[in-house]
Length: 194
Image (cartoon, rainbow, N blue to C red):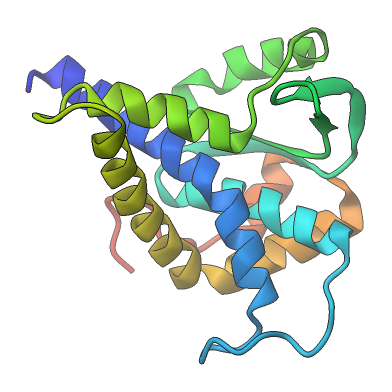
């Protein structure tokens, strides 16, 4: 595999993991203790949404990307998926080199339909599956399972930081890059050892 293709594959894998992280962080938030038992109290929808968005941000940072904005403020005028839902919150996560471009374009999202996390994962996994010897939906499923396991391990490894970020996001509703970096300070990023 040439260098440009390897770089593209790594970028797509990171995007899949960031997209998977929201739902996986929600699931982890529902599990209170380390032995897998359920919480004895119910989490509010706001707490689950904050955990969801914090999961996206923390996994992106752990993989060496930049999280420059988090929000749990609903935007009912922004359709998500096939039009059945709206933007309940968002995490702006991208490679550091693209932060300025994404920030400039970020407010234009009001005029477009956004994909759901699941749609993003499926489309990107199908792209990666084309590189597999037995390309197709079964290869895409294998890729998703592998990346999901890696994402779950990242969330578990950084769970205290994810919780702290989620609690801060629940309280502030919207966070900028400097606030996010402050919450995630000390998180082990891809390629570093702690």
